[in-house]
Every structure is written in C-alpha cells, then in structure tokens.
Image 1: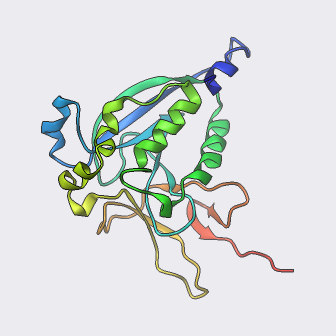
Image 2: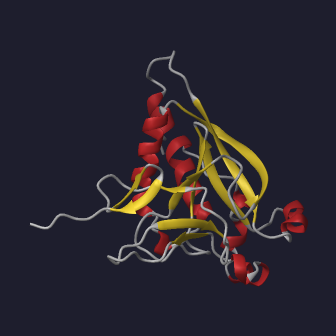
Length: 212
C-alpha cells in the first residue's frame, strides 16, 4: 500500500515536515499490571502540528472526532507517546484531512470492540505512513469479551457529551470525558465541510438549514 506520506516525498525537498505521534492514555489502573505483559485498556490520539486528534462516542450521527491540547485528554491518565513518522502536510492541510476523515467516525457509531478510538488512530496512521499503530495499544479490544470484564463500566466508552437541546430543539456539543463527568469542555469536535454543525468563536453551534 502506498501511503500519503510516500506520495508527497517527491515534492520540494526544502519543505518542512511535522512529526506524528501516538499519545497513549490509561483508562484503568489495571494497566499498571497489564502493560508489562503487552496488554492494557488504552485511549489514544494522534498528535501533529501542536494539536491532538481522537475519536469518542456520543448519541448523534455527527462527528465524534475532536481535538485537544497534546497529552492532556481529559478523563484519562497519559502514559507515553510513540513516534509514528512525519508528514509534510501544512497545519491547515492536516486539519482538513482530519475533518474529511471525521465523516467516517460519527459519535453514534463508536463501539468499544469494533470501532473505538484506537481504530481511528490506526486508520490515520495507515493513511499517513502506510503502517499500523503498535499492536499492544488495541490488543485488548481484539480479545472481545475479555475487555468488558476488565474495563470498569463507568469508563467503557470514550464519551463526547452534548448539551441539552435549546428552545428550537437543536443540540450543541458541550463536554468530554468519562461518563458522569461534570468538567468544563476543553476540546473541539471536528466536522466535515458543509455539515450542519460548525464552530463559531470556539463554541459549537448548530447551523440552521435554509429551506426553499
């Protein structure tokens, strides 16, 4: 498979390149024991150009991909970073790439075993470098039912919350974290161009569709 990275290497040799990192977090203290045996229950995000991108769950058929400050995803314990490679995408190109990819990762499509945050980062890594993320990051999900036995119920899903509907019945994205979290939002959901959710002055709003 020819990666996006390799197809760009024929460009200007003087162009600057951005490092790609996989930031890995613990979802449970059990990782302190499992990690040394090549197992664990992890959340992961892709870092590039000074921002981190990850995938979380919510109940709506809109993007579950969000961005946060690197190594500071709320609700989880940062463990380590893994260097994945580099890209010569500019910051705007990289964000556009993530926005387009977010169309495949709606919040209501999140599944702990078959489509979780680590599947998202693996997809990004494959497209940009032609290689998968390290196998140990998502190994527990591949074991299926074992995951639900180890993972506490309160953190079985990486959750992106939504605020209560407004007077006109629309919703807006409001918070992120584990279930039951009351922390203030410190993330931004990404959306595809021309979607019905957008960010205005760093606050998420639902756009009104014009009717003929």
